[in-house]
Amino acid sequence: MALAVWIMDDGGVHPSGLIISTYNFNANDLVFLQKALINNFDLVTSVFNKKEGLVLYFPKNQLSKLSNIVKIFMEPSMYYKLNGY
Image (cartoon, helix red, strand yellow):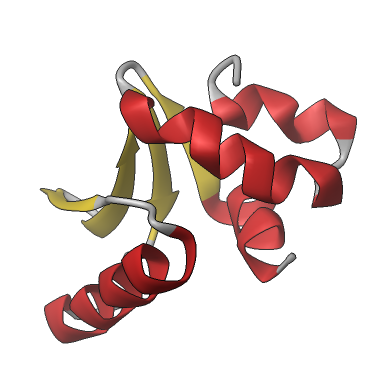
């Protein structure tokens, strides 16, 4: 449920997936988060450095799996953040 809320709040559609704005996280925090996502949900992510800071990126090939995990907790008006999944 926490991941669904986070996506609804700080998530955004990316042309090739979904990003979560994690600007206040440092690189070590994001590595820890990536390990938790892979170990707990089998979700593979990347980290991008944007002008504003670091963002967590879910590629399109992970969105079906992500959607199955979080969609039941999301408001329907926020489904667009899952980029059609």
